[in-house]
Every structure is written in structure tokens, then in C-alpha cells.
Amino acid sequence: MTHEAISTVVTEVACPLCGHACDDLSVDTAGAALAVVAHGCDRATSGFARLGAGSNVATPRIAGRAATLDEACAEAARLLAASAQPAFGGMALDVSGARGAMELVDRAGGVIDHMNNEFGWRASRVIQDGGGINTTLAEVKNRADLILLVGTDAVSAQPRFFERCVWVEETMFDLQPASRRIVYLGGGLDTQPGHSPDGRAPDVFDFDLSRMPEALSVLNALAAQQPVAGDAPLGIALARWQELAEALLGAKYSVIVWTGPAFEVSQLDLNVGAIVSLVRRLNVTTRCNSLPLAGNDGDLSMGAVHTWQTGYPMRTSYASGAPKFDPLHNGIDRLLATGEADALVWLSSLNDLQSPPATGVPTIVIAPPSLKLASEPQVFIPVATPGMHHTGHFVRTDKVVTLPLQALRRSALPAAGDVAVAIANRLKEVQS
Ligand code: SF4
Image (cartoon, rainbow, N blue to C red):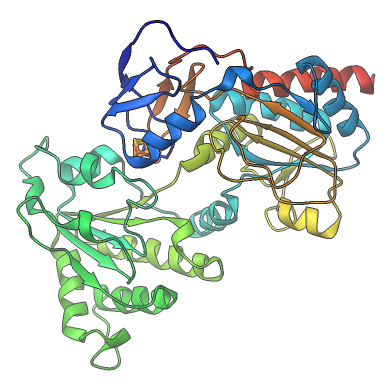
């Protein structure tokens, strides 16, 4: 294993390990692992250590045997040429990785989906139908006087949310950050980060998260000044619900924070629709915005590239030679379960914790060497990680900022996007 010769701490490092995309980390590149020495959360500390360590020793494999990169790309192209409908999943990539992936999916005539897309496409469909008003992290930091967290504690998805957006030193306007009101809707959440710096506890509406549709119905009705039956909806005194609705109506700039994976899949459309409706209602008389926490595993980076290039979200098929978006048909779990997909390509340079699904079809994995595999794929190509071994770009949760990622240490491993393009070129040769 090669260790860097000179100890160097790099500052103002952007982190691609969740959609918050913090840009203030300090990382020591001297040791065997990349060490986050300032401003990192636990996820960043462990992620930089894992993904940034020991990459130079990994080699590609074909059926478990060591191979050259060229041999592995040729074998991947051969498998794809023999496939009638390959599925492309994972897709935890930065922008350049996503561009390479698009070239390969298009060339292979495959179907593309993201590991987080079970939530993403459902939420997008609701917004398509009813519109939505979202805010940015900067607006939350500078303006939010009431933050309502719906079914999420925020920190499970994006660990530094409160540190970077809520309990800050100062804001651009006359809002005192410590005076913000924090309200959690739902039980079983980590509410400790919602305590203000002076020790004020947040409000917690504690109920089973599966009852979120009822809770949002109560709030929507009260915000519309409609009657609600019973004196304790979900076991919580009606007076508390009424007070919360009045506080939302009286706030200058409230923000409703939510994240798709926090909801039961079967309730996601209902909950997102109710949030959109509540935001719309409150904006009749005051300002209220929604803040979906997304961008984890590069889902917004991959989604942005896909939309730039095709005009459609993922869950799109290229089998006919033109993109065909069908979120119900093109979920790759479904395609693999029904046998409609006969090969799987798993691309992931940012996530080494989620393994590709176990399938009986030929599988090509393009991922960091630290990825734990349930079984050996036909082809495994280890790749570098953007923001650690090579430069890149990463779309933040609010989609208004695409952060540049730094190369912190050299790696002999290729970038995922370059591997995808190399396989696409090989495939072109096989097909011609
Ligand atoms: S909150 Fe997210 S972006 Fe920020 S340091 Fe932690 S993992 Fe990285």
C-alpha cells in the first residue's frame, strides 16, 4: 500500500456523502486513509476513511479472477451485446460519472434507474400534478422562523442540517437564529438536535409515523380554518394542533422539511400531496416553503444529467433507440424479478455500503473496491471516488448549487464515468 509522503491537510473540502454537500471540511491526506480532521460528521469521517483508503491495490476481476481493465471492459461489452434488455442500477455518481453512464446505457439500449428512485419518482409525480414551492438551504438559514419536520429528524438523512442551517451564529436579516421554533411531526425521531443553543426544547407531536396522512389532514384542515372531529386527533389534544396551525399562519417564513425515504412507500404520494397542499394554503396569507432533503448517493446529480440530456427523469428505457420514460414499468427491481431484464450493470462510485441486488442474471459491478458483495459478479471493476481521488461536480439537495469536488489524493483506479465510456466504445466495436 502506498502512503503519501508529505502530511497535508486540505481545507474547504466539499463532501459528496450526502445531499447537504458541506463545503467546509478539513481532510488530512497523509495517512493510509483520508482523515476528516474538522467539520465532518460521523458519516463523512467513516466514508472518507473507507472510500479514500487503499484503492491502489484493487484490480478488475472477471468471474473472480484478476484481469486487466481492458479485459474487464471487453468482457462487460460482450455480456451487454448478448443481453436483450440490460438494467442499469445503483447510479450513485457525480455529474461526470453520470455523463459516462448515460453514454453506456444509450449504447446498450438498457433501462436506467437509481438506488433511491423508489421514493424519487413518486414524489416527482405528485409535484408534476400539483406543483410545489421549495426553498434553498440559504433561505432556511437566513429566514426560517418556524421549521416543521414531517416524519424526519433531518439529521438521519443529512447529519449537519441543524449545525449548518438552523443553529447558526447569525443570519443576513433581523432573525435571531436561536429564536427559531422547531416542531417535529411524528414519533421515534432523534429530536436532540432540535434543542436551541439556550436549551429550549422543540415541540414534538409524538405518534406512529404510519399515521402521517391523518396528521397532515388535521393540519391542512385547521390551516384552512375547517373543523376537525374529536378533541384529540392521533391522541394529541386538539388545542395543540390548533396552536400549531395558528403558528404556521402567523410565521413570517416557515419551512416544511421532509424526505421521501422517511415515509412508507404506500403513503408517499399521499404525504407529499398533503405537504404541497399545506404549503399552498399557507402562502395565501404568509410565506411557507417546502424543503425536501434529497441528493444522497448522487441521486440529484444523476437525475440532473439524465434530464439535461433527455428531458425525462430516470426509469427510462433506451431499448427502442429513443428514451421512453415509464416509472411504473421501468423500475429495475421489477424488471429483474419478472425476468424482463437479462443483465445488470451496477454503477456506484459514491456508495460502498449498498450492494447490488442478488439476481440470477449476468452482473457487472463498477464500484469502489470497498463495496461488500453478496456474491462475485461476472465482472467487477474497482473505481475511484469523486471528491477523494479525482475532481467532479455534485448537485446539492436544494438543486441551486452544484459543488466542485476536489482530488485529495492520487489513485491508480479509473473514474466510473471513464470506465462506462470505455465499455460503450468496446460495445460499439462488437455491434458494428
Ligand atoms: S452532513 Fe453530509 S455533506 Fe455534510 S459532512 Fe456529513 S455526510 Fe458530508
